[in-house]
Image (cartoon, rainbow, N blue to C red; front, side, top):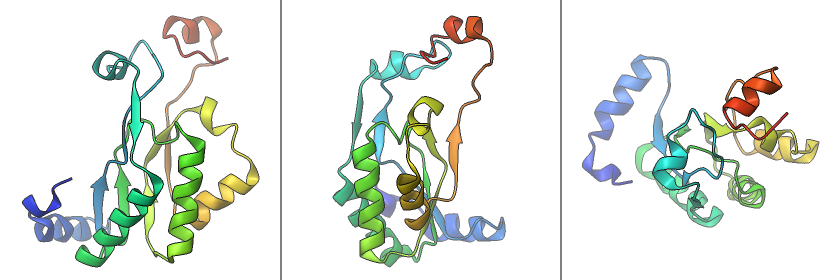
Amino acid sequence: MPYHLMDIDAILKYRQQQGMGRMLEYSSSQGCPNCCAFCAEPLVMKRGWSGLTAARVVKEWTKLVQDYGLSAINLVDSNFFVDINRVKEICLGLISSGLKISWHNANGTVAQLVNYDREMWQLLADSGCRSILVGAESGSEDMLALVDKQCT
């Protein structure tokens, strides 16, 4: 993202006044492989997904912290948790780098997240993950089928 084209000082000042701390948006991936009927993503990205490498994410977050004194990253990915190995590498990279930053609003699906074990949840917490956005699923099999959620 071309952060140098934005008035970062004004953004960070506003965020601090709102109690959000020194936080900027960051996109580590684009697209989503799911085909939920209520979402535009399958039409826009044709169910494709691509993500930056874990090393690049850690490097760019480190630079953002150094350049702008950030305390937090707000993820804007449509589906951050598509590649569990990539997520794990990002977590391990953040931990080993010693970067002190929290990250928020990583989007994921219940079907992805229920497969994470205790070790993975601990890595997420230790690396600074503080919030995950998960769409509300339905308890009705008929509704899940209607919106093509591909889960039960």
